[in-house]
Image (cartoon, chains in turn cyan, red):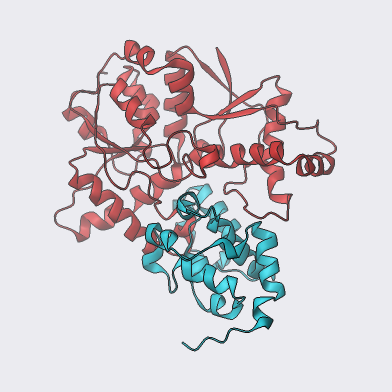
Amino acid sequence: MRTVISTETLYSDFVKKVEAISEQTLLSCYQCGKCSAGCPMSFAMDLLPNQIIRLAQLGLEDDIAKANTIWICASCITCSVRCPKGVDLARVMEALRLITSRKNIDQVQIPEIPKETIAQLPQLAMVGGFRKLTA
Amino acid sequence: MNLSYYPGCTLKTKAKNAEDSAIASLAALGIELVELPRWNCCGTVYSFAGDEELHQLAPVRNLIRVKETGSDKVVTICSFCYNTLKRADLLVTSNPDKMHTINTFMEEEIDYEGDVEVVHLLEVLRDDIGWESITEKVQVPLTGLKVAPYYGCTLLRPQDIAIDDVERPTIMGDLLKALGADVVDFPYATECCGSYQIISSPDFVSQRAWDILSSAVRRKADAIVLSCPLCDANLGQTQQEFIQKRSDFNGIPILYFTQLLAVALGLDPAVCRFELNYVDPRPLLESKELLRH
């Protein structure tokens, strides 16, 4: 993958937006990889959590959007409690999700969920999922 | 002693087995759980967004409902409700500006001033009753029952709302020991089950469930005990598939900690609502001669 880093992306509104929503300083991360090592969903992710925060530091919004990572994150907060730099990566993931879902883009198509699934799942699975994965 | 109790949605339906066994057990221990006369959804998943207060209205409104009853403490049984209510309280008490915004927005309500303490039922058992007092009330010690406590995420993370040590919790194991059970320590005790991803990535959640369940089985656990209705569904509903596909897996019952508490206190098994458990724990409990009715 060829990645172009420029001052345009580095100082973009995207970086400011992620930092504002997450209330985190992205450059605090020094890429130790502890977050990815402990992430229970990393096996299903295109890019690992530490790669996502690196891309966010560089303002590479499109590369983040191409990966499934932020939509596979289950908000378990394991990364945040283990980060030696105190970065709350779960909040960074949420900010990245919100930047998409605030454009009214859903990751789950609610009308397509089978009736049997709705009957089977506890309410908190559905309400929780809709709140994290839909606009 | 009376305690204000916030049930939440799932405790009234799929997890009625958690609610009924909790209310009966606490009554046997001398505490009446008094359900709030009015309550709404807790918000289910805490919103991490720093730039919007809207998602905090639901949990804060519930805390106002507690305040209206004259109580300064509310207990939850569902781990998710505990997390959202506790974190919302922490957010507004540490951010007076946000508290002001939320109070102003809900001007029809009395103001919330950070005056309600949110606790989980396990904390009540540990801090208000105490393990020794519980042991004294045990009628049917869970002798010979090997149980793996599974904590999941929302009781322990983030650190500032954790009911116990984030990485090495013992609270549920301590309860099981007080009830006479053998506690099985297993490496997945605090790992996420995949949570709400069950609605969008069920195959990935199924992989998580298998890792967790098979680890407990390898450690020779007879059953898993937990507090979260979403963990219960994710670890319970996937088991039929595993039983069909894997000749070496026969299923492992999953119980709410409140159900084993009720069994050990010698209460009528009807309060445990075992018919709602995804894998019926009754054959196991009967084989250990723990169901005495």
